[in-house]
Length: 353
Image (cartoon, rainbow, N blue to C red; front, top):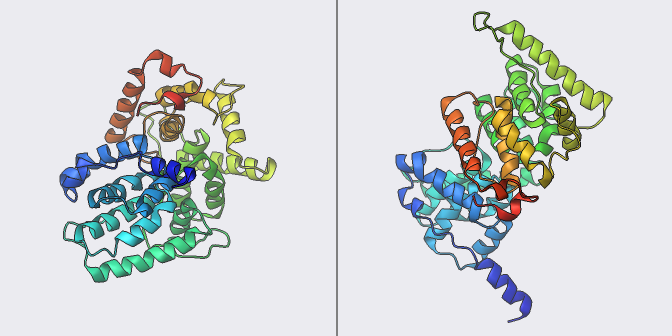
């Protein structure tokens, strides 16, 4: 065996995908408890998606390890993993088909199917054909645009020049998928979708996602609890979002996330910071603790990118009690870290998810 092959073998064999949570799939306990534990481990300790593909293709994985990958790695929402689900969904093993069908929807950010009754081979073949079309579409368009197209199509609109498959889903499902996969670099797709949206409800959802990804506050509830809020406040918020989009697209001619985030941070009194650099770790921690609720999702995501703990917070449901509890739990986790970890120059180097 050559040296390069030996190194590859060490890399591919260095991580275990053993997951006791697989035993609870499918079922209510898996949904309520086991899935979160499995996916947190997958996002914190497993190798990256490309290495997972390599392990899968090596032929060395056991049945339960493949099941774990199908159910755990979907949290990354990385389309590079789609061929694994395509292979597994036509397996002769029923539980493998169930995990593939469930994990595939989860990977896309889609509504999750009920597979407790199993997945018939005929249904698996239909799903495999859909996967082929999805893979073909995502070769040309990113996953976030895939779902934005679905949201606009529901009102008769479209992203510019769209070609490819569109899943017939409600706007609620489409926007829920968008926020699960949203990254700072996706701000250009959000501004484009906002410009092409027609219905007010569509623009409101896009406005809230723009607040998250750009650290902006377009909508503010009145401080006086007796005053209430209504359509007038929403209209003013949409005007502010219109001005934001017009400024960055028409005046600045850019949607570069570093420039947008730097501008937003300056209004908070934070200057001379590269928003997406490791040195910004403490800034994002303060955003998570003290920033507007709309920002918590992306703050948690950036802290994870810098070596923190993975946590799937929501922007569209940021004020719901489960989200508040999840954020508080995440903040507690950061507080319990040793001080030398919080103050390190490169948080990723000493992460303990």
